Length: 202
Image (tube, rainbow, N blue to C red; front, side, top):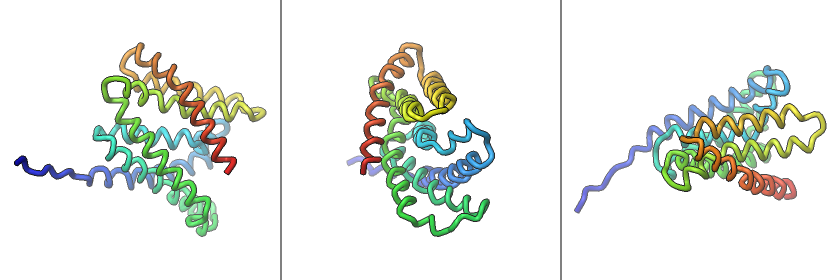
């Protein structure tokens, strides 16, 4: 009988928790002091989703550990963001446990699982690499589509589209993979767009 293999989960915890604290802090600082239109990248669901993807991609581990770690990253980032707002501009500390904060944490769990897993897929051979590589572009393209409906948001659309393409260029291993990932990103972006619309309806 083969001996049981003990998996050390400490590297995930030791990176996900401080990473979440740093993400929430830097996100608020970015929004507060970076000028428009780049400040919108701080107030961006795509930015947080790509942070979860980057965590899974960097971790070089299995999808389960990447998904759980990325979910922890985003969940911790939410109270870190609001705590930073309290420390830097005197916001009410009660927002930390407000229903809106809890809702964002719930979304963080979902996004962490999906995009953390996608980060590991981007390193695997086969079709999963294409889907994983497409995810950062898809979430930026979806956000660009939402900006497109707002007057005066042309720069935001351009920035999101450029970042989506850049993510594919950086993560993809070949021009063929990059082209396929961009093609896959468009319908995935449509799915995310519908999901946001349904969530807004509720």
